[in-house]
Image (cartoon, rainbow, N blue to C red; front, side):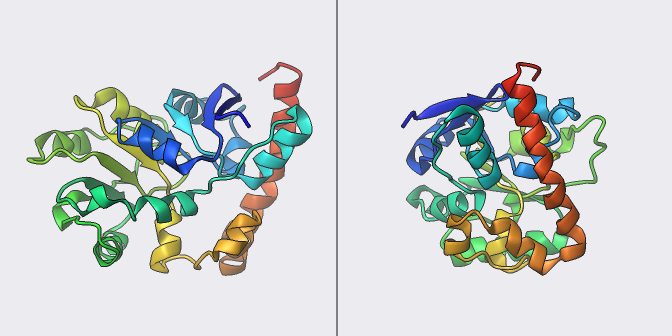
Length: 246
């Protein structure tokens, strides 16, 4: 099994958590593209550029894994965002003060995330949380966040972006280009919400069976049914890749 592979000019690692962590501790930028996200890359150039600009991606999408086998005979080991996060939060290095910085979508989720992280042994103070503004999707940038990261007395090793897909990847790419020091950027989005209970908890066996999407649909059919139905457009994206038009 290859340790790395490329799809859509995005560099993936083949499902190894240890490989992912070793790269992050060296200051790499990691993305976790979903099936619905990947299904839009031929239409959303800014998002695709951010995925291609990442140092590596992990194979989170079960649909992508199935289609990669069908179209290109690629054998890929799944490493979902929630599984990655559960393993990552057990790392001893996170017990040191100031190692982790978290970007959260709201004040409420910032408080919930801070409590959860401390409860599982991560040494993160409230000053190492940042509530993101509502970004203009035409130009995702955040000079205030860069200034805060530059001014921290203890420079964090890891930056956890708990934002929506399509936004967090572009923000991570922006930070990679603007920040004066290396930091491991982690785009696991809503994965922390599965752990805190802000979204329906994701049993490990369902995640292993590529059924994380089903949990989200059961929790909020109105929001997620259409999103995951649209993910089947990924078949067309694979077809474009197969005939070298992507």
